[in-house]
Image 1 (spheres, rainbow, N blue to C red):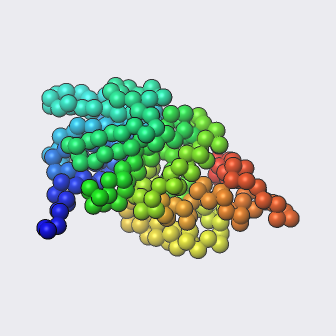
Image 2: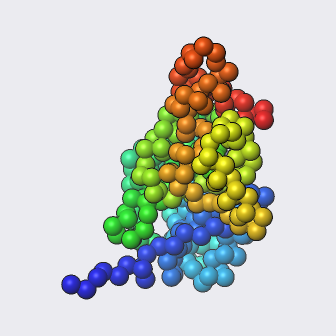
Image 3: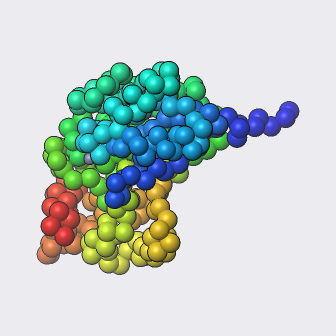
Length: 276
Ligand SMILES: [Zn+2]
């Protein structure tokens, strides 16, 4: 039997840089494009025109303007070109021009881009924050992918603007249970600063020290450190490691081997990072 070639139809994911450190993710094939969190329309339009693509889809993770500010401009641009555009976003947040409002376990099937995504509720950074996850590896011949906005960053996590530490820890724990080879597409290049903090929390973490060197080399060449993977983040990201005793001791400055729980530890290191 001839092997099934999927490369020609499989989607590709590329970064469009915006503002000082945002990544707008473009999901594309040879003709069509979808955009995740387009905070700025002009940058996206330049990308679409340079690559001769048709924009069909916008996926929004949460309501912050650096993720939603481009929707209106892109909508106008699509109307001018007579392209039907569908805007997907979290049901529990006010997203401008949102056509399809999503909650946990909803599916977003995008046949034009050959990708099917599942919605994961991730309250914490904002109250209604969602992520988009695709495990279609057998169809696309690729690793699972996750678009997680400002919830999980490489080496860190989003600030708690609207949610509680318990909500954020629960959200991060959901992500930690995704397959190890999941490629994590977060919305900011914060990795290097996050790792400076992570090394203060876990100075003896060898995987962290090694990863930090890799990141330093990439950033010296102005290259992106994203996507990361769930496997890497479980090894190096203190916010996914709140169950580990050495980290709990460090974060809590505990004596006499008294163990704190994961939530105490998460709460303390999130507050520590806010002041770092
Ligand atoms: Zn945000």
